[in-house]
Length: 392
Ligand SMILES: *Cc1c(COP(=O)(O)O)cnc(C)c1O
Image (cartoon, rainbow, N blue to C red; front, side, top):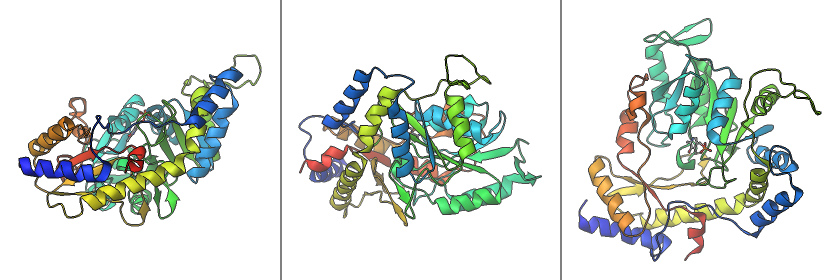
């Protein structure tokens, strides 16, 4: 791409979101009077920490939004993923299938349980796990004994798969669920970025045995820091709640605990903010979708790339808008464009460093990753705050 195509990209972004008089961040948290009201109320009650009514209110709102019977609020998405894997029965030395194209938290959560991340490839149409490639790969490297899938090369059990909905775009959960049941894999959805996204009309996070959403400051809505575990299995929900709250069994003044556990709970203060933010989710998603369609329209006849659009049968929350440069574009070429755009006042970013390319994953097992590798070199995330939709 030459200087002229760089200017063309700037013009097209400008057409979608206006000029960058001030620096336009990639994604900003957004707050209203409602947020202040709930947070203030929480402070005034004095119940800002581990007890208080907002946690349950927040859990109920998210469970309903996400078509799940239960929701357990936790301190952040990362510990949510760790705890979800633990209650689902993932053991130390199990292998956990994780897309190479994800944020490092997905793999970290497996590491903390002593499990081994095993990286798999993505699909060009969803950016997430490709069920067809996965089936072929597991047939090649897997062997099933007494209902448990083993990696023939490492001899370790492969117990679980953690698909991730990239930038809020739903992956093919139908295809994925079929492969998972074929090979006896537990499914835990990393729906950290996909609150409000739907596949075949059903919420992301509700397809797996458990699902996890993040409410970090950069996500579509935020509790400052926070996460939630979704499930429709009552026993798993109770287990997650119990382990996240120091496994305390007595309801009164006694300190009785029945096992070593965690303090992973979400403080009531964060949940108060979460309740207010949940009440704004519907409008937020509406704005996000308007913004996405502005980008799609302004890049419509662009020859050097396209704006990623929600896959078939799905409805995306469009958490982060993504320009995918044309196939064959080099990393260097992408990075030059990223530099130009940042200098022009538009904060843009590449996708994450692929998981298998991080040094500490050098010895982690992996499938062939051709799609992830060529996709990662071509992705640019564009400014995506919902309020940008109100600018024009
Ligand atoms: C944000 C995110 C997480 C982790 O959530 P935190 O609340 O920041 O711990 C996990 N996975 C993905 C894909 C994420 O984007």
